[in-house]
Length: 203
Length: 207
Image 1 (cartoon, helix red, strand yellow):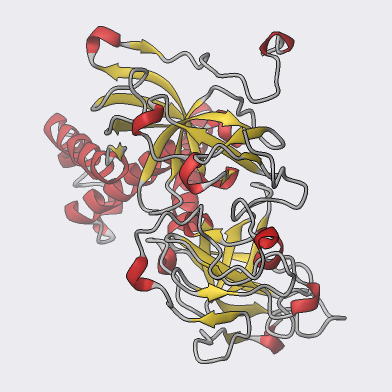
Image 2 (cartoon, each protein chain N blue to C red):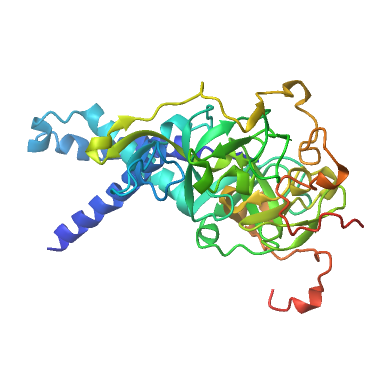
């Protein structure tokens, strides 16, 4: 799981592009005689200001609305394959409408600077099996994550339920490869031990 | 008129992202509720609550030190923020005041947080070790009320009774931590199935 560095790269990069475009279209030079420039506002200062401005806007978009991820690793195959590029959205997580079966991106509980992409299998109060086939009850405020490729996935069966606060965003759209371009549907889910799937018609 | 409205919109559209970015990455001011960190925070109970400066830049890589006062998202409720002191780091062996966690080795990526006021604190003794990914910032200053203005020190040298061994099993880092949180169990019935297992979880059910 790798986050595309859109916040760091896109921000300054787009701001430089915009500044260059404005320079080329002449709006930079036409303002040279404006009174604001006489107050000491130089070209490099305005470039810096634009960089900060667009960088901050990109940061907020990436951390509160949508961001881009490259999924690396076999744990979610065949749903998400290695090196798929996906768009994730933060809205569902922010309003607490996470459901079983959702594909999500979370901070790894083992290494907080990296991200994991898994499926929510259990919510608060559900009974789930851990790797030793013991029944575990998911505590309050936690979720139980599992990879679709159960044999090749380090997930909650190994490190236990993770707090909802670590969940970052929900997978929404696949950009790459183009053959599977389109919305990601969060429908697949397994029955929990002691639970009848037919009762879950509301799901 | 329309021009003025457009200019105001443009200003707000830039000011809001810039301030959010600042609050997330540099620092913010937070009010401290409750007496769990007494006497360090909210030292005078009758007075107004303390306001602290949370330094988010210091914890940008989720690194903490023993003795830091840290604000973090509550593991049991994602909408609440708690402020506690880091007592145990990964690899330490800790013992909680209750019997729920004894001789617990803290796994990689987790910390043990405790309030200074042990009797009135909902901390790791209740909900277990906290993943470092939940850390929001480090409380570095009390900025209000002015009479209590001071820097908050990292009390690394203080003795923390709940830490039995500091970094005790650093050589066996690769052991599967979730299944072996307990070292030298006193009796088989004391062995919890997992670090987060709550009291009413199906402890003995096997398939």
